[in-house]
Length: 298
Image (cartoon, rainbow, N blue to C red; front, top):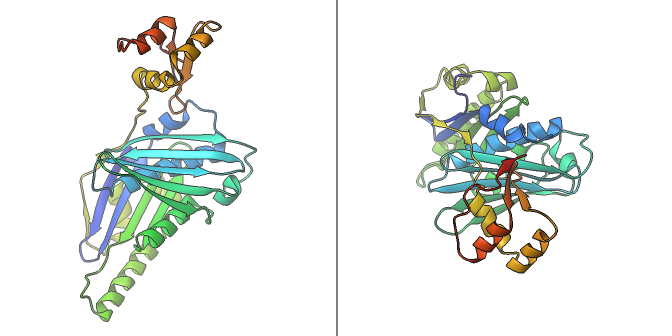
């Protein structure tokens, strides 16, 4: 796929419809390679990060999109985060036997929380019932209910790479006539019907120009500059130190009286940070010179 680890926006010149295509290979492998996830979870994670990437591309501010689902069946938590500049990370926690690839059966009595988190300003959260067999179906329901914007997604993953196609109907002009509104609705249905013909292997293997030509060779489509997608974890020794500092100095030193060091492993990237007595005392002396002492990767 020539658009590997890239996302690209496109617009229909004569329709009020926008779209995006994303293909994620190395970044997807970086998400799953350090975890022994069941096959169905690997596939879901691929779809989750593709969806997060597509949603973050429509942000009009610096920040991130977080998709997090909790359930009481085979999967306890599944979360993917993508920033406005397409830095992704994701994680899953299983809580039982994985027997299905359908979301409702994997999560049981679960829900999906969509968090829009701007760098500056207040967070926004939307809660979506997991009432569809697919993540795409759940997200389509969210857009229709929360933003009243008809939206369609196609998400695929083959455990090697992940890909997604996003279409959204833009609002028609406020002074549009009934005939113009009907024409706009007809155009949307036509564009979606053509997109429904895309096969999963085509979405995963073909470059964006080829996909759009196959689907819309009779339409005029403008393709914008692509943006790279990459795996990035925000963990660091300092962030981890700030976290364990909340436990309190005496409690930490009590642990270190028994153990040679306190080790904290990032759930996203499996990076492990170690803190000995010198490090802990330095924390509470407002000393920031922790360096990389005791840092290891397990």
